[in-house]
Amino acid sequence: MNRIEIKKIVIMGSGAVGTYFGSMLSKAGLDVVFIARGEHLKKLSSSGVSVKSFWDNFVIPVNAIDSPDFVGEVDLILYCVKTYSNKIAIKEMSPLVGNKTIILTIQNGISSADQISKEYGWENLLEGSTYIEVSRENPGTVTQTGETALIRFGHRKNTFKYLNSVKEVLSVKGIQIEISNDIESVLWSKLILVGAIGPIMASTRSSFVDILDSPYGKSICEKMMQEIYLVAKSKGVFLPSDLVEKNLNYLLKDKENIQSSLQQDILSGKPLELDDLMGAALKIGKNNGIDMPVCESFYTVLYNSINVE
Image 1 (cartoon, rainbow, N blue to C red):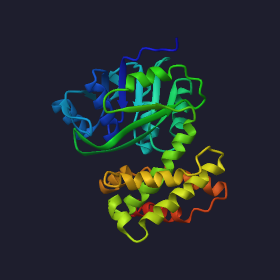
Image 2 (image 1 turned 30 degrees about the horizontal axis):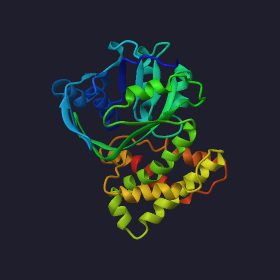
Image 3 (image 1 turned 180 degrees about the vertical axis):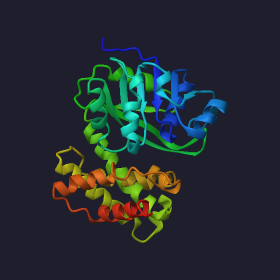
Image 4 (image 1 turned 45 degrees about the vertical axis):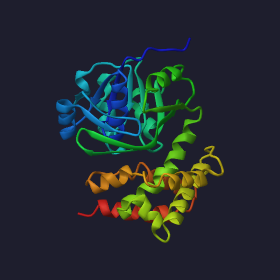
C-alpha cells in the first residue's frame, strides 16, 4: 500500500501564504514549525498567530524559529520562500532534509523545482501551485479572503508513490488539495494568471477593481495573459484553448478579493519576483519567436522602478 506517515512539517518561508497554510495545519493538530524572521518571528513566538479567514478567525500559539539548524530532519517541507531568496534558502534548509523528506514547493513561477532539484534531486520533490488571496499586513497576523485556499500539486515525472499521503495530511479545514498528473500545465496556468495581474497591479499601485474601471484595464490584462499563453504553447505545454477566457472570468467574478504579492512587495520596498515570473516568460518567448509587446512594456516599467538609484 503506497502510504507514508507524515508527522513533522516545516513551513520554509513564513510570509502570508506560508503563515496561512502553516496556521491551518497547526490548528488541525499537526506538528508544524515555522521558519520566520524579524518582527514576524517575534510576534509568532510571543503571541502566536492571528488568522482571519473565510472559514474561521482564531489566535493560536505556534512553534516559530529563525533557523532550520535547530529542527532536525522532518517529514515534509512546505517551501514558500520568495523566489529571489532561493540561492540562500535552498541550501539553508539542508538540515531539514533526510532520505525520506518530502519537499513541496508552492512558489510562483515555473523554475522553482529545477533550482531545488540541483541540491536535493527529484525523487521526493513535489511541485505545487496555490490559488489563495491572503495578506500579512502586520507581524503575526494573516488575512485570507474568498472561498478558495487551494494547493494543486504533483510530481514532474509522475513516479512519486505517496501523493495521496501528502494530500491526506494537508487536507484540513481551510485548505483545499488537488493532485495533478500534469504539473507543468498547472504551473503555466498559474503563471498566465499572476504573470498578468501582478505586474499590472504593481505598476499602477491600484486595486484590481480600479484597474477594471479604467478604459483599457480589462483589455490589457487579457492581452498579457494571451501573450504568456502563447509562450507556454510554444513549449508544447498542454493548455485548454479557452484558458485565458476562464482566467479572465475568474478574475472578474472575484475582483473584490484579488490581491498581488508583487504589488505588496513593491509597496513595502521589498525585492520583486519579476525575473522569475514575467522575466522567465519573456526569455522563453524571445527564444521561441513569440511577440510580447504588452508584457515587455510592464516588465520595463517595473524593472526601471526597482533599479533607480
